[in-house]
Image 1 (tube, rainbow, N blue to C red):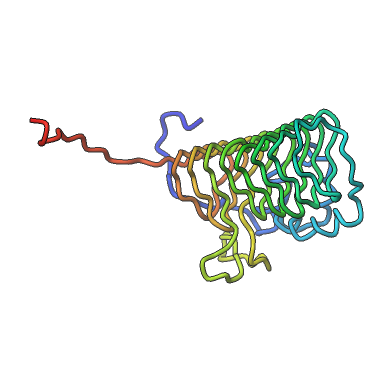
Image 2 (cartoon, rainbow, N blue to C red; image 1 turned 135 degrees about the vertical axis):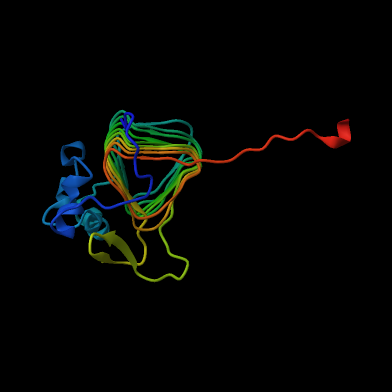
Length: 248
């Protein structure tokens, strides 16, 4: 992807004429890979869809369990589970939540309020979801937190990846635009993860991070700001190996 050219490893913003162009929904996610594209209609910025989830579910959600239950997972009466989806014992689907077809909700998964999940999604052990939109075929399989975030088509979060959604000072979250910060109007906003992005194990994605399509983020990275589509964010460590003196 990067060839032999030297690449700028710093997070940077793709030049464009306006924040509306840079942060438009179509710049991060393919709306044909969700049954809930209406959430993004007439939105200037992709993150504005997060503000619509609660009302969208309130008026459109029709609770039903069409999938397969293994054992006795907890599923409230404000949850829809699509055909072909498997929900394992030990999962907790508190809802309101809309989970698509042919998903795999593994034991220990905790789905809180206002979560919309596409088709073919893996939701793994010890993963927590809250006020988020997950596109088709995304994989969030191990020890992840996804709060107030959008995860694109076929995006993958490695084990332990955290999408942090609140600043330490609890103030409004802004996104780094080309001419300065862009206010979101949100005090809880995790990240937008573009289609097919790959995020390595134990990375922390800080509030308001915007990860473009087809990005690769190395394990244990601490990420904030904007990562343009097709970028690789590397983490380099210096290691020193010493002999144990007490054994010699």
